[in-house]
Length: 181
Image 1 (cartoon, rainbow, N blue to C red):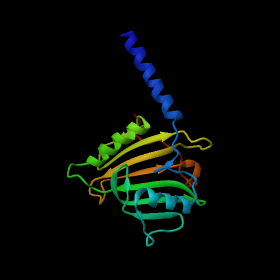
Image 2 (spheres, helix red, strand yellow; image 1 turned 30 degrees about the horizontal axis):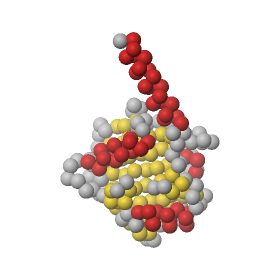
Image 3 (cartoon, helix red, strand yellow; image 1 turned 30 degrees about the vertical axis):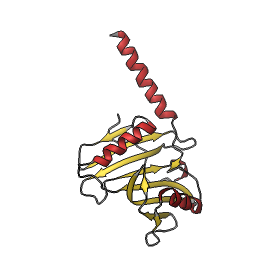
Image 4 (cartoon, helix red, strand yellow; image 1 turned 60 degrees about the vertical axis):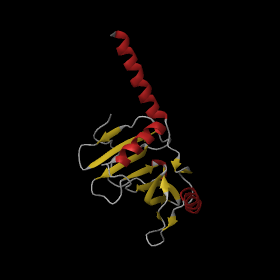
């Protein structure tokens, strides 16, 4: 029993250490901090998405179609602060008749790539999981959020955010989601 408790303690410490040292470097292999023109070209080449000029503004560039992690997307969005990539969002197309199948698939893929998620809430209409990453020089961590809402036009969305390249929102404190794992 003592050995089992020791192994459990070591495992938890290893997981906590990994969560504090892992880093998020970009979205779809486009490094955070990349200028808008380079990021747009990279995303188009990588995903075959088409620029949507009707929705695009200087700080938020929309793309129709494309793919994320091998799954087709309705939209991809790149957000910029001071001309530098700070956030990427993928809206995954609904492809399965099974409820929340894409959410489950992406959660598994993200866990395999980035390790154990820091929080998850699957108790209501909106399912949400979050991975946090150390962000050198930033007060709050970089994050990946996976969300699925019943009745949405898309199966789920994945949001990669870099706090190092984002303007802090006024009046918002950096608090963690409600259900840490």
